[in-house]
Amino acid sequence: MPRARHPCIPPKCPPCFPGCPIPMLRQQTPRPPLPALPTPFGCHPLLRTPHPAVFSPEKVPEKLDAIVIGSGIGGLAVAVLLAKVGRRVLVLEQHGRLGGCCHAFSEKGFEFDTGIHYVGELRDGSLWRFLVDQLTDGQLEWAPMPPTFDAVVLGEPGRDKAIQLCTGTRTYFNRLKEQFPGEEAAIDEFKRLVKVMGVTTGFWVLGVLKLLPLPLVRLLSRSGLLSLLSPSCRMTSRSVKDVVDGLTTNAKLRAVFSYIFPTYGVLPSKASFSLHSILVQHYLRGAWYPKGGSGEIVFHTIPIIQKAGGNVLGRAPVQSILLDSQGKACGVSVKKGQDVVNIFAPIIISDAGIFNTYERLLPPEARALPGKTPQCTSPPPSLSTPALRFSVFVGLRGSSQELGLQATNYYIYSDNNLDQIMRRYYNSSRDEAAANIPLLFVTSPSAKDPTWEMRYPGKSTLSIITMAKYEWFEEWKDKPVHKRGDAYEDVKKTFVDAVMQTVFKLYPHIEDKVEYVSGGTPLTNQHYIASPRGEFYGMDHDMARTQIEAIATARPQTAVPNLYLTGQDVAVCGFAGALQGAFLCTSAILKRNIYLDAMQLRKRVQGSNGKKKI
Image 1 (cartoon, rainbow, N blue to C red):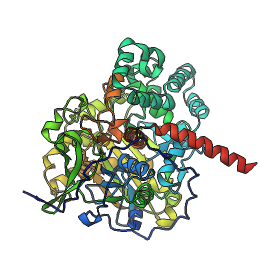
Image 2 (cartoon, helix red, strand yellow):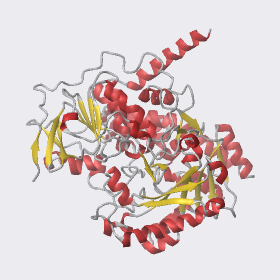
Image 3 (cartoon, one colour):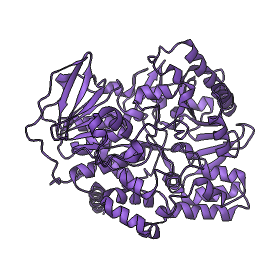
Image 4 (cartoon, rainbow, N blue to C red):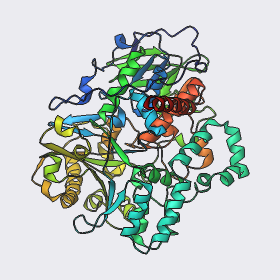
């Protein structure tokens, strides 16, 4: 048994966070970004961090105000927001690389992102851009993607023409009409439905449901008032497939209306149209990619946490959440070699996901407390939660321009009936699945990043994602990473080879330019981001999760006093969803609405900037 040592002494009277008496966010416009520095060949931007991020008791700050478990964007964002009001926060990451799905890694002289492929709603002047800039003091820059940010291939690349999805609400739908003549009425109705239930309405409804008292939400829901007042609430029980099938009989157009379902990981027949419409509208006004790659997100958030006296430490696997004699969260235990280090703070925030938090980190008596959300009773089975992925990372000799790589993302489907091809795939044996992969998401980080050629001249990269089942790789789950044996590597290679055959049809000039290729299974995700079965979107995003009372119940507050949740499981999936979880969590801890703070501050900043221009 590991023995506890180096305990950090808990405060005698853990203070509660009062309503913050000082402005939540910066009163001035974030400073302009510093000039970009070329990354040394083969180095990852995170290597520029001021000190090694490896955990040791000596690096734990004294008099902590909060501890965050997990360094995904949901954890880092809540730590930054608390740091901005003077709170001393410690972020603990079980892996050696910080950032969760925002981390990047380098292999054989190539740099790869793991989760951030594109983000919407980041146009200059938007509230969302203002909030994201606050998290890095404006140091992180975002590069706009090309006007055709997504393209959909239904069939075989090179043979079947790609359908283009373009920036701008008017252009997006007009371009669809050009590609689907005679379907103007269906496209107009799809546009209307997306607009009334889109990202602004959807996120506001989501926030209000989580901020209102739960008994009031239940009353409004069961009385029918919410459905009467909100189109988004009315559509939560209608699936994407149900809505889309009612719009048109054109199989290709149905597929294009539904194409973006991999961004939340649920088949169109199982996903709520309300959630789907949020994702569609999220990209209508354009898509952006972080300059320097997703690792820059992490690089620019850490100094803000450290400046307030906190720290961000890796290789710090939290073993359990500590409770005091009254059942309140008061600290965490961290494994260090054969020892266990107890660290105390008045507030504990988990970005480890609701399953890990309740099933692995809390003691048994806390798991049975009233108020535990019904979705977290056990890890979801892989078939009902198809958001498990198989990833392929490709390093190429030659620049993106030389190889004809595009910044546009490609969604490649083997047929028009998306539900049918995915169900057939999930019901297949492992060998059959590898030979009949129905979906690929193909993207080129090197083509999207304007700093890439400066940092990695004469090289380029591709990242490819498809779905997978945990059961196909489960027999190796107890083997250590990189030591799972030849049989495991052979299975991976079967999937990788099948994926690459399709990619070569999309980009025929790269076939003899491949210098590095590697595959990642659900077991890879399970190891690197500590998800129970390799899920990368947290809890299942099916229609059960998007019902009014389910949304309202999944809150930052837990049944354990002083324990809070952040990240995807509090809101919705993806970068934007995890940040929403962080904003909601910070609002709950500080007992103030930081969305209102942000809107008021943005108005003052814009007013000040307008006066300066006069």
